[in-house]
Length: 143
Image 1 (cartoon, one colour):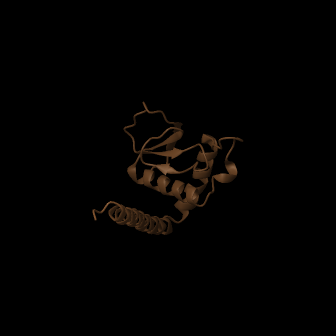
Image 2 (cartoon, one colour; image 1 turned 90 degrees about the vertical axis):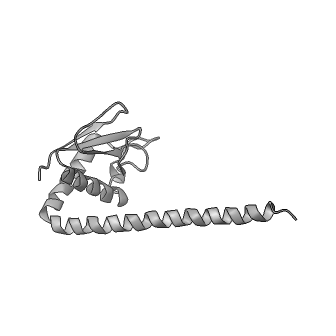
Image 3 (cartoon, helix red, strand yellow; image 1 turned 60 degrees about the horizontal axis):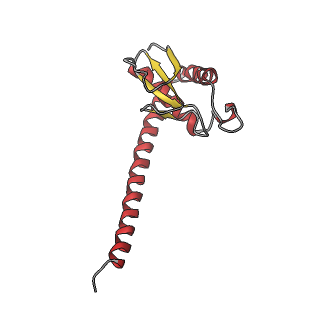
């Protein structure tokens, strides 16, 4: 697996034919990986789809564990620098390469948990809609 990647500040006009994803770089959610571009993000480009997935999940794990927080700069709007991001990811790639089988198991579990979390959020939204409908029906019924 080719393990080279580029990190650049992204712009809305930036288009890439290479496998890529985005990472939020400002605010307390700095380091959050995204599939779609948004303002204040980096674009991470790789040579293969497989390596993009590895980087995505490494970034996701670091973001979820708040590993980027000690490296945030700025007093008003915290942000993470490209160099720090690359350094942290490079360190973790070495760990993953040492035991890629265990990492793929973790990714599988994270995917499962993420899908369950999405289902729960959808169910909670439906419950909120149901509550709203009951209250609406009560106050708007014709007597």
